[in-house]
Amino acid sequence: MKIIISGGGTGGHIFPAISIANEIRARHPQAEILFVGAENRMEMERVPAAGYQIIGLPVAGFDRKHLLKNISVLWKLSRSLAKARKIVRDVRPDVAIGVGGYASGPLLKAAAQMGVPTLLQEQNSFAGVTNKLLAKKAHKICVAYEGMEAFFPQEKIVQTGNPVRQDLVVTEAKKREACTFFGLNPNKKTVLVVGGSLGARTINESIARHCALDPQPSEAGDVQFIWQTGKSYYDGMAGQAHKDGGVGATHSDVHPMAFISRMDLAYSAADLIISRAGAGSISEFCLLGKPVILVPSPNVAEDHQTKNAQALVRKNAAIMIADRDAGEELVPAALKLIHNGAQLKQLSDNILKLAKPDAAKKIVDEIDRIVGQARNPI
Image 1 (spheres, one colour):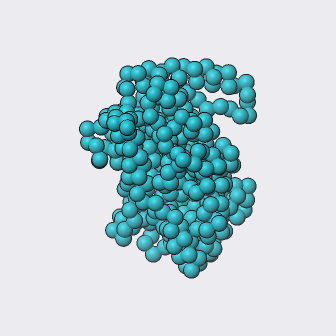
Image 2 (image 1 turned 120 degrees about the vertical axis):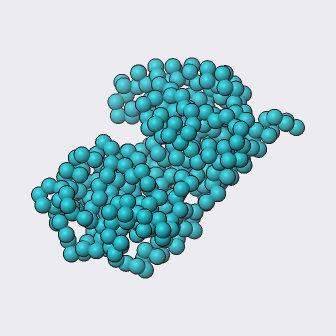
Image 3 (image 1 turned 135 degrees about the vertical axis):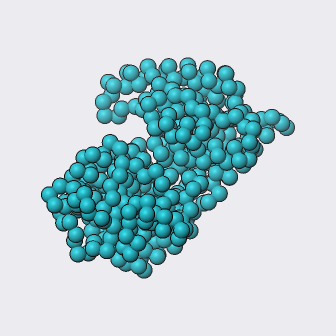
């Protein structure tokens, strides 16, 4: 079996793609799996680190604010389509899988044009532009939310959920290990702050502002923070948090870091999570039953993160704070919530009901059916 998986740009696309690849490899050890991503994006590092080959396309996303810049984007798209056709011609895959992000567009379009069966995986409650454009030619579309027939042909939709990283298991042993790994006090409550794999300015500034205002506010005396800032924000945010007597280098309750390599330990330690509302992250919170405050990014296509968050809020499975309000409201809301055991349990119970732990297996079931039908047509 030969398979191409295409997409990326953020961890929300990359981690599900790797999970699908791992399930294919577990089920079909001899399968040949090739990733196709966008040059100079994070998949070019993360995918090889997971043990898979990847080829980059010179594709770039459209700039909706500066339309003239899209002249070069169109040129890159043309080059990417030509390269994608060559990749498909050389590999001759049994199936091509698109996980979203603009990198998947040229590859899946080329595959469909050349008669290769395609499968799409849509993580969000509001479908991305790339997947909507590719849906007409797709054989199956695997989704995580109800109501996706508003975007895709209903007969092609399979509700599978979003695949998550396989190492995300919360145990007491991992919680003890996390205390050592992050330097935590096991007697204090822990808030995990993540803004996605690339960081989130508003969330970072909200935490840094809180740190600078008071080195040890009374309501936060028994609370500690694991804070993933994102690589590009780390120096500025850590420096801001440490200034003016706020959180000094020796302060034990705030732990800023550019990137958390052991997210399984961070999740095990967390009593509450503050996060953007990316679909992949939400799927992980559901699987682990973690109470969460979501701060949707306003800088994403079709405001899809707000729609992701609202899908949970309607089921009383998460708290949502608008990006514009986070500076004033985020940290006070977190400190209030983490001391409300009954509400934490209610949020945890409700979000756990939304978990779909076998998403990767269900997606690979669909891949197997597509390949089987293509090889053995009726």
